[in-house]
Image (spheres, rainbow, N blue to C red):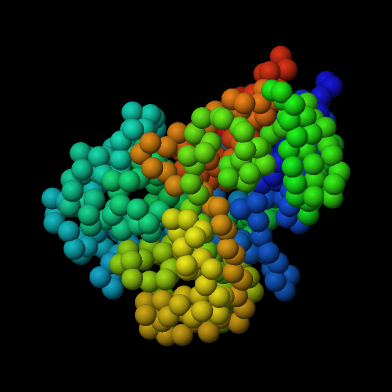
Length: 441
């Protein structure tokens, strides 16, 4: 099949787009400004060990992710482990999946029963389209009551978006509750970081499919003529012509390159920012946990992850691998630009306050992600997969996965959807979405 496609961005949505299109016979070029494919699922290496830039785990119901892990021959390496998620409130730690911890949580018995009913009802509901225009406050107050919302969920939406429940999508929260991340077994790959395995495997799939991958390369300009985008100009000055362009980069960056694109909802997307500091210590950490939400809202970190609790083989034997995470409503918040030594001091103070001793890390890796994921407000809508301005431009990325939770698998699925749209406009299709739907672990 004749036809050329340029994919802007080499994150997982861009990679799955490129793979599906190349498998269908199109000539595909991926432009990625980083030195490796993977985007937010990237890794770093230290003394022969791979670590994630930020916490990542495999969900049992993340169908597209499981399919791609199988495609690269890594699914049989996945181990599953039940983890402990803590909720820190009033200086106390609570594992709300533990009946004894739930009993001692400072909330009435009636409200605890309402909370349990909320979780059960959300788990049974997979389609949240009827909550698209309603807030998390609407959902929680009608299904569990205001006291449950105030005690449990107002801190969580502040930790995630720095917004109250009234300004967060009910459909988004419902989908998060449906997936039950804290109560189901999570996956990892022993003796490595699984996202490194995934990204390396996907890169191999692209290479075998003949995809031209340009790393350490940025897009300088997009050139259009009439209703079509016809050339992509690189920072090297090279111009690449294309029959189709797929943008998997953040919408703000794309609109800076194509300011006259009038596609609905594209300009309304606001991105949260993420700070992720991964470090290692020789000190053991008790109690054991994987995920701790700092619901008192008095700490620099929003959450702390003990990565070796999920993957006991990450890093060197005996090391404690800790990930401090802060979500910010946008990248202009002062904490985002704080010098690294001051940020580390704030995180270590958090640790000392919670655990009562100094962590004393012997290495630290800080990642600043200025455009992490969309801020999901009650009026949030996915932009259409096709541009309304240019008839050969398509969109993929985590801003098109609402109301599903933003995950590695939803990014991959978004790329397949964009590829299907390109091929549909060419009068053909890809079998990959049906293969994903039919896949069973």
